[in-house]
Image 1 (tube, helix red, strand yellow):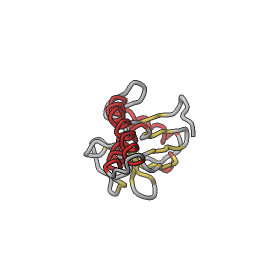
Image 2 (image 1 turned 90 degrees about the horizontal axis):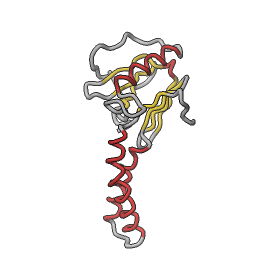
Image 3 (image 1 turned 180 degrees about the horizontal axis):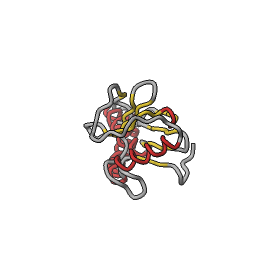
Image 4 (image 1 turned 90 degrees about the vertical axis):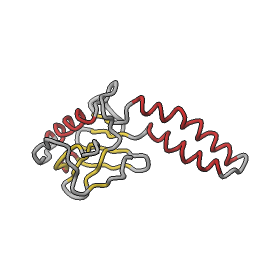
Length: 158
């Protein structure tokens, strides 16, 4: 689904993405060359490292009118906003979302501070709570301090 101007987007800070991409692309290309042309197994290590660095480009959380889509490095999660019961900040400073059923999803990909057009973690959490409430979610009272979810998919989005 395409992003519209009304969507809320959280992603790694633009400087963090560029710092990872600048060495990641050459590393990926050199690794592919070593594997394809020279059959050198060291190329596989460079491909894996380069891919992990370049993957910062597509990591993001997009909140649409009625659902959110969290895109990690390797997988994607979709959650209806009305299914959200809590949105919080963990003790390790990661935003998280608790659906009515299942494990909480930790959103590691959201930047700590505001970016050029995207809000940081605290602004994202506040706006996500507002949008979930408008969508009909039954939210628990807002958390006043960083709190870890009871059970979470901790590796998603890293």
